[in-house]
Image (tube, rainbow, N blue to C red; front, side):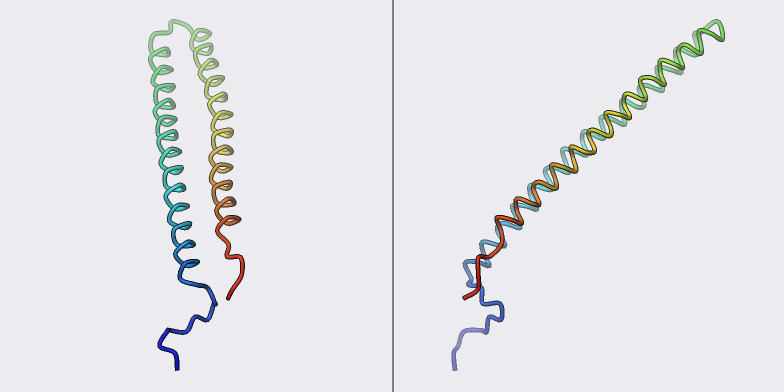
Length: 114
């Protein structure tokens, strides 16, 4: 009877170590990417606050309804541009994360069991 524990998957210890290392690397890459994305979204929230603060300042100094409407219209246009940028950023962030996972999955698979 062998003193080695049974290995139902047939993977060697080296393969297991390589897979563990690959998963740890993927986890670190994903955490780094999420951290970068989080900082970018935090900056975006700050810019949103600045936008509405600027509008409030402009509206408080307007002297007519047309002047107030113009200030509000400019704010809405800027907000729409920010929304379009949000969509692009979200798409890019998701694409980067998906690519990292896909690369990891394709390079981290065992080639066979022994």
